[in-house]
Length: 362
Image 1 (tube, rainbow, N blue to C red):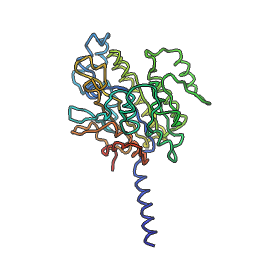
Image 2 (cartoon, rainbow, N blue to C red):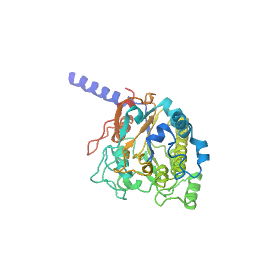
Image 3 (cartoon, one colour):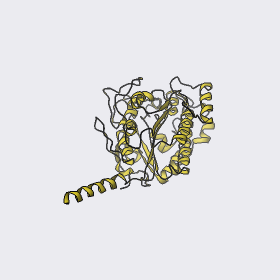
Image 4 (tube, rainbow, N blue to C red):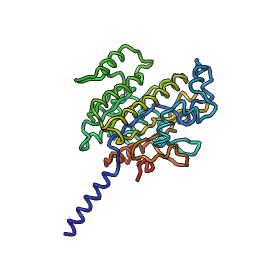
């Protein structure tokens, strides 16, 4: 009899643990190569008025220059600094010795995305941006195999390497990335138009489409299919930075902020997602600052290339705003944090980073 009672108590306790979060859906969102410096202080004074990197200085200054760095960041990323700062948390402002770093030693895209999505770095196998199927199982693939999640995981990216990073063939997760069109029966009118426009509007880059396509493909899919775990990877910030176009880099960051705001507002207006959804937003790598031209670059030879940030907003996250205390966090903690929010017991063949405890109310 005592054994039965103990067993029942164990079941009740387990159910209590599984039901402790309000989050039922998570959106992991990344801005490729977006520096923590712009996130926390807005437009860089050494770049915004530099004719080498800006050809519309007066116009750009009117949009994004303010003497006060707090006001600069607010005009550059208004959703982050109005909504997330009031309702969520922001990590990685090194002015307060609050640090977020990659654990991989590559400091470029594929290794960063692998670390975000798996929870561990793999420098021995993930050491290039080549289109090689990821040998590692991502959190997305793991969750897709769990009860109640099969067919409820999807990914969207501007870069055409994401089908390989997520290993679309093995995982079975739908990945719309690069210049892929929306496919399948029952395309919405908007998806039909997006498919046409994507063929007709040239991208400045060979392997990366404009983020507007990624955003709207994701929005249409979410509206139709109601997935529970979504990954959206915006890419323009990195490519404009590589090209040395600081004006386009800032405008892209602002536009991405607005995309995220529109997605959040839609989520909060939809009964399926309202008050049940968390956004965790981060980046794959940092960029340089000194010498000045290294803002265009990253990689392990560039100082600052492994310095990143993350933000979070959702029903389980205490509204602490900008974290202004010393702390060290890592890119490999994203996967475990998302898994904890979804009450999924995520494990992998390699040791994964620990969840960020402060992000989830106890």
